[in-house]
Length: 84
View 1 (cartoon, rainbow, N blue to C red):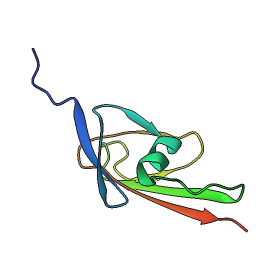
View 2 (view 1 turned 120 degrees about the vertical axis):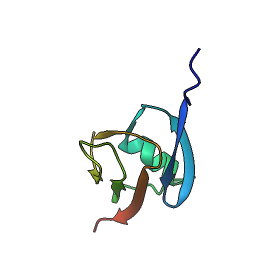
View 3 (view 1 turned 180 degrees about the vertical axis):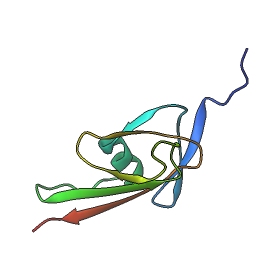
View 4 (view 1 turned 120 degrees about the horizontal axis):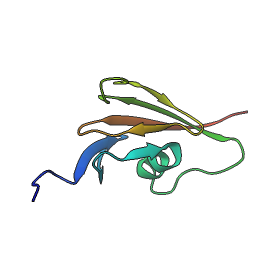
C-alpha cells in the first residue's frame, strides 16, 4: 500500500487550493478555483499565468483549450478583463 499523497496544494490568486495529484487543469477549472463566482458576460476574458510548474514548462500562460499538469506548490494568477 502506497503512502504517497493523493492531493497536492496549489496557490490560485493567493489562496491555497487542493487538487488531485497528477491532474491536468483546464482554463475553466483554474477560473473556477480562482473565483467563487466568476465574472460573466460576452466581453469577459481571463488571463491566466502560472509558475513553479513541471520541468518542461515551469512557467507560462493558459488560454483557450490549454491544460496544464499541476504539481505541489504551483502558483496561478487569474485576472478577468472586459474587452471593449
